[in-house]
Each structure stands twice: as structure tokens, then as C-alpha cells.
Image 1 (cartoon, rainbow, N blue to C red):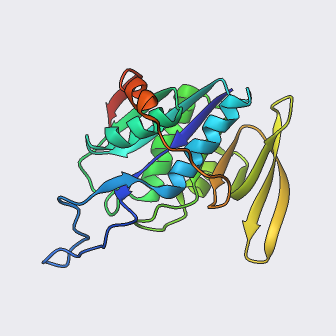
Image 2 (cartoon, rainbow, N blue to C red; image 1 turned 90 degrees about the vertical axis):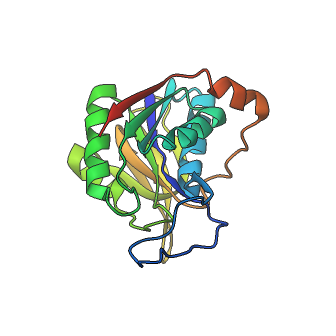
Image 3 (cartoon, rainbow, N blue to C red; image 1 turned 30 degrees about the horizontal axis):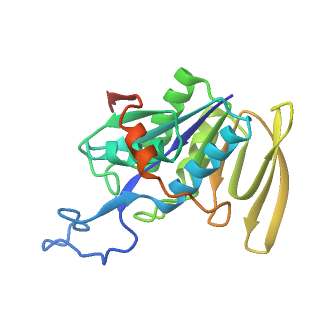
Length: 210
């Protein structure tokens, strides 16, 4: 089973946000950027599924400028097998909206035929919390959002997901293929080691225009 995981390049969570002088947007020039923290959790969960022999291949996908390849390389260093970079010069925190991202991911799902798509529940730049749900709607797939724990059945036909809710936890059974969005307590992402960072440079990243 293939697992596709979406990752987004955002302003690093530790950076103090500044507004441009014309007040049109957040300043991103010469600002430290990194992978969205919830996307890190999504990558970690996908890699753990591969380590458990549930997944055969983990494909990382990112939409953004050429610098987004750095985010993909981080995902590859964490354990993803290959990357797909959808290139665009539009700002992903403003101009590339969740529906557009969901449509791009839906097209890639049609090309790659994964058994599961994993995303962070939201990005810390726009906090939309929409892409996973929209993707499930476009694909007509089941969805398990705000995942706290994931257990895939031995036959890989379904998964049990414990999801976080305002009132506590809810356990649901979801048939596969499905869309999964990762919440904060799903796992603790690993650090990419130097040997894995070096190996990631040799892994394949396909680039295509938005």
C-alpha cells in the first residue's frame, strides 16, 4: 500500500511574525522557514506505517516555490521514499487556497493510487483546517480527522482511528482508502539524522508546474 503525505513550507513556529510595511501580508523575505509542525507529525505517522510493514512506499508532496524542495528533503530525511514538488510562485499562505491544494492532491491521488493520504490537521500560517476534508470530498473517500491514534487492520482494508474532539476522544472504524489528518498528540516526530539527510539528497523528487 502506498501512503501519500502532504507537507507545507511555513514560517518557522519560533519566528516572531512581522507585517510588511504596506500591510499587505506577513513578511517572509529573509525569514526562517520550516515544515509545518502538523505536517511533521503526518510524515512521522506515514513512516511508522512503513516501518510496521503496513505501507510499502511513502510519497511526500509539497506545493510552493523552489525552496519547498527543502521541505521535501526534510520529509525524505525522516523516511519518505520519494517526493513530488508542485511548483508555483504564488504565496501558499495567501494565494494558494485549500480548495486548490485539495484539487491538486486529488489529481495526484488519481496518478499514484495510494491507499491512504495523510495530512496535518492544519497549517500554522493560515490555520484553515480545510484541505483534508475537501480532499476527502473530492475523492468521495472516508475521512478521519484530528487523529490521536491509528491502527490499520491486518488485511489493510480498514483502520481504527481515535480522534480528538472538544468533548474528549472518539473511536471510529474507517474503510480504506481514506484521508487522515494528524493532530498534535498522534506521535512525536523524529529528528532527521545526518546520515539520513545525506541519503535524502539522492532520493527522487519529481517537479511539475501547478
